Length: 431
Image 1 (cartoon, rainbow, N blue to C red):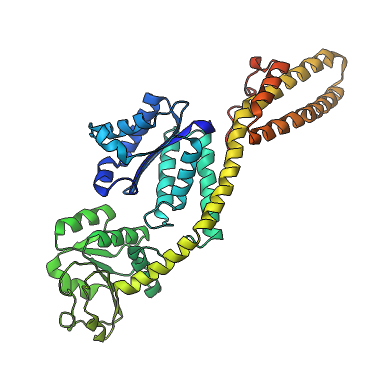
Image 2 (image 1 turned 120 degrees about the horizontal axis):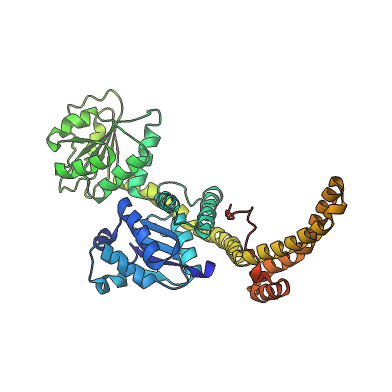
């Protein structure tokens, strides 16, 4: 199974936003695509991740279907000129490459903002969908749980998750520091360009509810507000909205400041009012801080916070990679042992069959108490006989030399005639 795992990836590293938008899958499209992959290619252990930054397919199959899967994805999205888009995909044709890439994606090493926690959560949702649709086999279950444990180690043992490493995230983190005593501050977001939109997404991720969006194009505000359940205000009502907000985040692109001392001169702030200016050039005049109760944080202040956090995260990358290396060694050992598990079970079944046949020959001459003792003794003998071959098989797996031992055991005990598991055992769960 391990050697058959592969992946197809399209991400911000290989494709511009315009291409990523064309290929991204929503949840319903992902469900349909998972079913089509299973039925068309007869693959297992399926995982499809689709976000604004990446669309990736992971699967297990004896044959390499990477190029065909990329073409199918393009056709599903209505892009029939597939040759034009194939260069945007990166194909991971070996299991080691595919597994390592998934580890690195899930820990945030390949995020646009390194260490970002959003992608691990998105991968968890993708995995849950695969599990719900019964397309995630034992291999993927074990792999994902190993990755989740690795993420936990990264958070506990390194500074890779420390601080806010993006401007938009740092702005939201600053709000929580400034207004920690408020359970739910009133936040006004003015301007919904790239940074403003990212701020809104981060506010939503922090589960803040009293958010008002204000943009010169109201339709854009309504689209984003509808996505997160936020309130919309007209740009013409901006002054009234500022009066009612605890925090004003401005990311408006203008030649002159939008918020000036003159504009805010009638502001009667009963408590502190915080302006966070993320615009370049600045959209909040520095003079507004002369107004009682008004505090201003500009893009340089926010960027310094983000740069410090990013520096700590970058410095922690070698530690993260070392943890991934350890996790991959453990996972690879388990994966290789999966190859010999059927042989081990057949070997146990063969010895158990011999044990039961021999006991059955003598039961009629034994009391119940004697039969119970004989059963217990022979089970113990069988376990001792099995122990060394099993340990040798597992050690051979790690060396990549299990095939010879499997052949020897199969010939000696005629294991081809044995079931891979005893009827009462049922299928083995990976955990």
